[in-house]
Image (tube, rainbow, N blue to C red; front, top):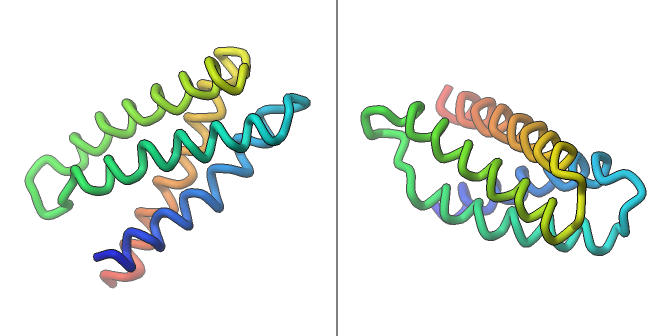
Length: 112
């Protein structure tokens, strides 16, 4: 369980942080990276622990929760990293779509 979580977290950070940095444009790298890292660490663990894929309605609950994560991370990028609101939302949607797709792919490969 802990190994799965650490692999999921590392994958998320490796995929999402570069997307956010690219979408941030000319904003200060340290500020954007710090906010993006904080937002990911704050949301990833909560999402991971809250959901058990063996329960009925997993995909619908995951979609709702991922929407919350996108909104939270976009709000952090907008308020703390000072990305324009549309760019913050676009960065969050793109980053989370990529990492969620990678998570599904990893899950499918692991479970055969």
